[in-house]
View 1 (cartoon, rainbow, N blue to C red):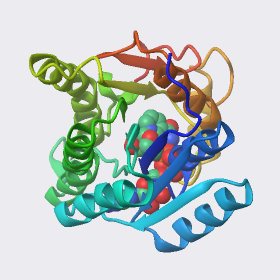
View 2 (cartoon, rainbow, N blue to C red):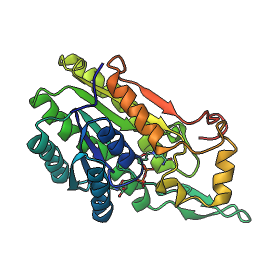
View 3 (tube, rainbow, N blue to C red):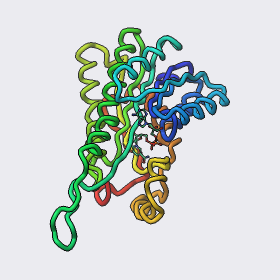
View 4 (cartoon, rainbow, N blue to C red):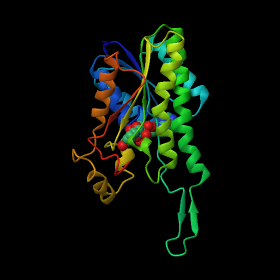
Length: 265
Ligand SMILES: NC(=O)c1ccc[n+]([C@@H]2O[C@H](COP(=O)([O-])OP(=O)(O)OC[C@H]3O[C@@H](n4cnc5c(N)ncnc54)[C@H](O)[C@@H]3O)[C@@H](O)[C@H]2O)c1
């Protein structure tokens, strides 16, 4: 079993939502964190909150779609703390919409998802994760670090209407742990650096609360046996448990309060 105490977590999307909850969980358990976010203001507030908790924290303004930013992020973690033990590339966005919207009366398509709305989600949720993981894992290997790469998928990985962009990126998050674990296994690294994904259902963060109106939220909650949104702290706690348990590798761990996946993604 690994201990969070004194370990170093690199968390993108650390300025808010699940990323910030994970940073707090890490600090509460004696870990150190490097939080990264494109939103400077969120990042400042997050850093102040973590410091108030007594945490050792460094914040890095970083756009995960930028290769140099991701390299700088990984370098900062090594320079400040000498190691990286947990990588959580949690920066992500949604830009929902139907791929094609035919008019109900005429049956003819009147609207399409814009290429920009598709591409932006791919760039941040998929390419951004690739860059973050590649750069951090390189430093982990070269500095003999032990730990976990924890990606974030979603129940949307199973396919949700109106999310062709988002669901596609989250399906990719479900397969990446297998690819990365297999590659590390080939090179004799898989016992030292594990890779998994957590796949939450609907979590009570700004991503959900800001975008969904009460009616849409009620409709979603009707499909959730526990009758509420998953708390970001519950996702953070799951990541901590997976970090500690070294038998967990190469797989996806769902956390959705029993969401009826067959009926609703
Ligand atoms: N909230 C949910 O219900 C839910 C469910 C499943 C998976 N997830 C995933 O969890 C992750 C975090 O989501 P959240 O709900 O906390 O969202 P959130 O919007 O609260 O936080 C996302 C953070 O990512 C940052 N970010 C966005 N683009 C960035 C970029 N290019 N570079 C760096 N940072 C960037 C934002 O500024 C924000 O602070 C996402 O990957 C999301 O897809 C969320």
